[in-house]
Structures are given as C-alpha cells and as structure tokens.
Image (cartoon, rainbow, N blue to C red; front, top):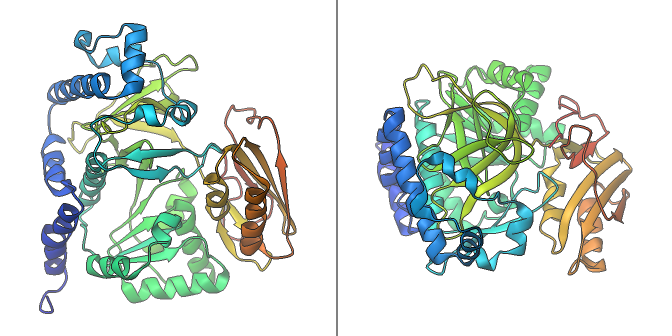
Length: 464
C-alpha cells in the first residue's frame, strides 16, 4: 500500500479493510450501508410500506421469542396480525429505563445470539445497562457510515476524534492501536483539556491534517476558541467537515467550530441505547434513519403528536430483535418536521432537538474536562438509580445519589477516590444519599452543574 495516497488509500480502507474488519466481527455493515444508500431515495409511500413490513416482522418475533413482550401482548390482548399501519404502534405501552432495569432477562430473546453489554452515558442522571446483538450493531454502523459519506468523506480518510468514553479510551491496546492506524483515526481525550493539553491537541491536529473531525460539540468548540484566543491557525488544514454528537449543538458552538476549521459542522443525534437516530445532511435537513428507526413525538400522557409539535422523542429500533427497544422513551424533546429536505432524500426530518447536554468541570490545577469524566465513575456502580453532581467551587463537589442495594460504603469510597484523582486530592467530595432528586422547573433534570467558570466553555450546558 506504500504507493497509494489520498483517495486511493481511502478507497482501499473503505472498500476492503473496513468491510473485512466488520465481517470478522460477524457484522454485515457494508452490505447494509449499500442498501441504505439505495433506500434513502425511495418515495415516502415506498419507505412507509417497508417500515410497516419490518415492524410487523419485528413485533411478531418479539411476541414469539421475548418473554416480556409475550406476557405484555397477552395481557393487553394485542395481536400483531391486527397492525394496519405505523400509527397502531401507539397501542403498545411506552418502555423506559425503569422497566428495562426491572426486566433485563425477560427482554432477551430466546433466540438471541451473542449479546454485548452496554451502558448509557448517564446523561439523564439515570444510568442504564442493556444488551445489543450483532444485527443491531451492524445497522447502527451502516447508518452512521451512510451519513458520513453524505459529506464527501469516508472511512479511511484521516480523522481526529475528540472523545471521552472509557469504552473507547480504555481500549488502547495493541490491537486497537493497530486498527486506528489502519483506518487513519487519531483519538484525543476530551477528559484532558488544560491549556497545555489544548496546545498539544492543536499541534497534533495540524500535523495530521485530517479530512474530518468527530467529537462532542463543546469539546471541539473549546479547542476552536482556544486556537482563536492564542492565534493558532486551524483553517488551513483542509478539514472538510466536523461531525458532532452526544450533546446539544448550540449556534455559538457551530459558529466557533466552523470559523476555526473553515468547514461545515454536521450534527448527529442518537444515543447508545436508542441507536443512531438522525443526522444532518449538507442541505441542512436532520434526517431520521427511518429504515431502522421509527420516531414518535409524544405528549405528557404518551400520546403521539402531529408534525411540528414538540414533545418527547420515543424510539422503536427495528434491528433490536435480540433485546427489543419498542417505544423507548429517550427523555429528549424534539418535533417531526412537516417539510421535506431540498436534498431529495425521502427520509423524514427531525427539528428543534433539545437533547441532553454535558457541562465542563474544572480541576484545582485548572484542567478543564468533560463532566463525563465524573459521570462514568457514578453511572456504572451497582444500585445507582439517579444522581446529580454539583461542583460548588474548586474545593468542593457534591454528589447526590438515589441508590439501593447492592450499593455500599465501598462504592461510595470509590466515588470519593476517583473524583479526587480527577479534581484534586484536597477537594472535598461530599456524597449524600437522598430519596428523590427533583427535576428543574422545566421538568428536565440537571445532572451536572459546575459553578466554576471554564475559560472558553459554555457554563449552562447541563440541562438534560
């Protein structure tokens, strides 16, 4: 491959190495992506019929193979054969984190293949453990891959990822390092954003000259603002697009990233539990991955709302047969768009997404990091049902917990130790057990609040 450069390398990776990598993992992501690139141009009627056919098959399998839905459908006398249209989905009760936690084993299909355990990011203050099969993973990879190619970039183009999940950052062994080198991906830790590290990040990005960026909007905006403040150029690198996800994208963040890197910013909306839900195209439409995902917008009583009305986003993921997500409450607020996109794709549109977002916290030495650096410590502990983290000042951080057995004093000590390791050894970490954590007046939960200003960072990103 030494003679290959530029797009030739990208083609070799996208057309050869990555599909081989996926097949070795038991995924059919490449074939699925090709199918999605055809179906995105279908008419609205053809897409609706495809979704209805898949929904019928999906629910029939859930009824036959998943104990939770076999019992539920029996109790409510719901017959999948009576499903006349997508609107009939609303007859099925909503699914939420509480129900999943109480029925984890009953939600597994008795035909499930190997299942992989995942955790949500805990952005609502309610962490969740759940399972995915290879079929679901393949569909999510394919949907993300399709959206990437909308912007004229592909797997194999040089990429810088600014991220913070322990799933990613904890996997830097030899195999993972080799994979990243093969696919030309460089990972920068969003948890470590002190002034000196920001300078290192900028120099690293300049040396790589990536075709695309991927990361939290607040992290990329933080880098962009630091570059502007210190007079370091990032607009001469040839970056074609900056993909952002996992948080709400604010207008000032979009502008800062676009200005610094001289590229468009593409917003993505999804979650590890709910799937790859929607992605922005170059024409500005936020397209739902509708072949795999049915999005409903519901009111406070759980009843579907018409387009252009805001409500809670509820997702049915049609590739989750091994561990079904049927009418799953995301806790996010958005509306379906009654308009079509000028790009010509038949995929429906979301708008006015008010998703969960992440704040920065600041260590005693001035290091700015994602609040996710603290969230990941709390969310995975057994028995934690809800939490709220408040950084009162550089010397004191409070953690409120709604926790039941098997949460223990040892787990509480783990929170203290790990928070001190990130925020500073002399920081007072107060862990308080409470019976209930009240929402804000808006009805949403603020799961992290830092009252310490972080230079260049938004200080009001934590509404969730």
